[in-house]
Image (cartoon, rainbow, N blue to C red; front, side):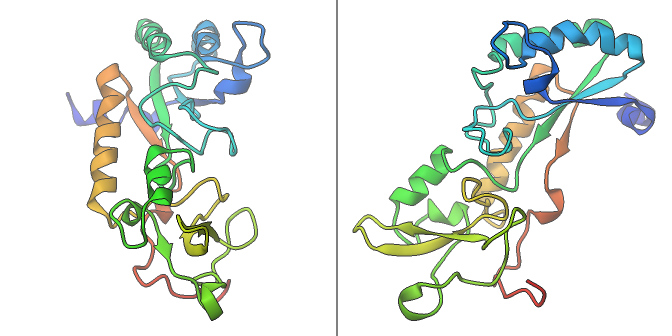
Length: 227
């Protein structure tokens, strides 16, 4: 494979597909992967070289699928892995590249890792996959720092511990249903190594990395001078 082959995307026409609204194949009012398949010949006629699929992974859909509960599956709203494999077969036949949206900064509060973190004690390995911290002020009643979430309000939410008392806080730079992952924890990188192999093994050509600029936080989580 030549260097130019690796860089096909530099001059390519990429069409973003928001799966939920692109084309509904079942009449339930929700777009799906079968709808994307049905629409690909039209995209090919438009001169599209590749499609970028917005998240279609299992998700509670608090943020249009950017709150991912499982990075290696398809939400039943949109189909299943077998349907995805058919999409890839059609894309190859049409000469269309396929890129996926990967969301490594945060996951869903319904992700098994976060559910385990909520059930675990402060300082546990389960909580170390995220940014848990003690609060400030009397009884830790104030957030650990003054950071604000992208969608407004504090970037921290407090959890209730197993004993029923208010406990630590966890960081979420977006909604409270999207806890930020701790990229200084090797487990997180190892998990995404698996994710970034899983989809190319099914034929995917590349990824768009969501919030790539925000993956690593200052280890001390200091106050922002301009909150």
